[in-house]
Image 1 (cartoon, one colour):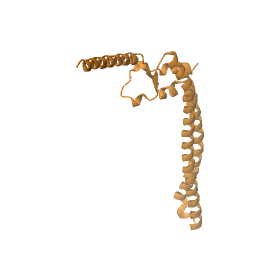
Image 2 (cartoon, rainbow, N blue to C red):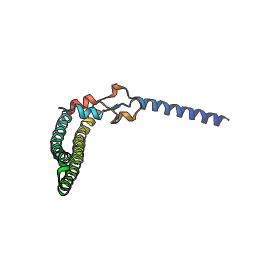
Image 3 (tube, rainbow, N blue to C red):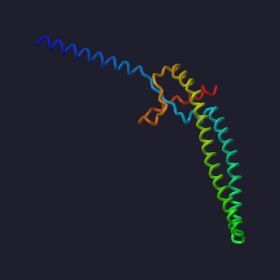
Image 4 (tube, rainbow, N blue to C red):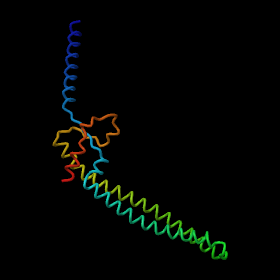
Length: 172
């Protein structure tokens, strides 16, 4: 019985050491998070990227609106003068209308896709540059872990948000 009592005591002591070491280890951990959307929206690079995307959007919008004006002109012609046209004329104008309408739809879809692709490319560039800055800030402030998606966590104290520091460093 003495051996089993000794072994039990040793197990309790070993377990206590592990628990105390675990508590000590956990106390040394420093976790932070960064809000990527804020990083993109508030950084100088993000502002420049938004201007570039807006410029592209306006260019594509002009092209799309010009095509829409052509479509509307043909539609109006069909509505106002369609009954006065010969069957062949009405058919030709109707086919032109359908062709222009398809081109308009294609232009619109292409413009949306191009703008989305450009936006993603610019955001990816910002995040790539920010990654180095993020690592430098985390290392300087001795963070063990930085979360990039705080929404996947139930709760994070706002005091561990390092977005402002990363934006500040990124803007230098």
